[in-house]
Length: 202
Image (cartoon, rainbow, N blue to C red; front, side, top):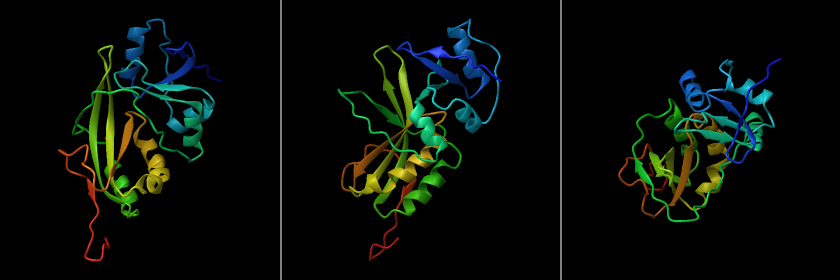
C-alpha cells in the first residue's frame, strides 16, 4: 500500500504531482520545502491506473509542466485520445522557431499517419513560446498540418493517440492550415511532404 503526497493547484483543488526526473522533483522541493522527499519510480501506465480518477500534474514547478484531467487519463488508459480545440480570447504574442530537440521516433510515427491520409499535403514541426503577463513563458511543440479542409477530421483520432506518447514531457499544439493558405511556420522546412504524380497519386 502506498500513500502519495498531493499538492493544491491554483484553484485550491488537490492534484497529484509526478515527475520526469529527480531534478524536476527538486523544483517542487525548492518551492515547497515541506513537501515529501521520498519518491517511488514506476512505469507511467501503472501510475495512471493506480491514480485513475485523480487530477495529475507533471513537473508542477518546472518551466514546462502539464496537467492531466481525470477524463484525459482515462482516454490514455483506454486507448482513446482526442485533440482538444483551444480558442484564444485575445491577441496573443507567439514566438516560433525550430525545436532544439525532437522526441525520438516522433516524426517517423507522424509521417506514417499522414502518408495514409491523402487529405494531408505537408507537416512541419516547430517550437512555440508564449510569454505570460507574469513574466514567465509557456513553451510547447507546434505541429502545423497543411492540407484539405477535411484533414482535421481525417487524422484527429490517430493523431491524438500518437501524440499522447510524445506529449508527456512537453505539450504539443496542433495547427491546421488550409491547403492554399500561408504556412504559419513558413521559415521551417516540412518534415513531411506528400509526393503527387501526374494523376495525383503518391
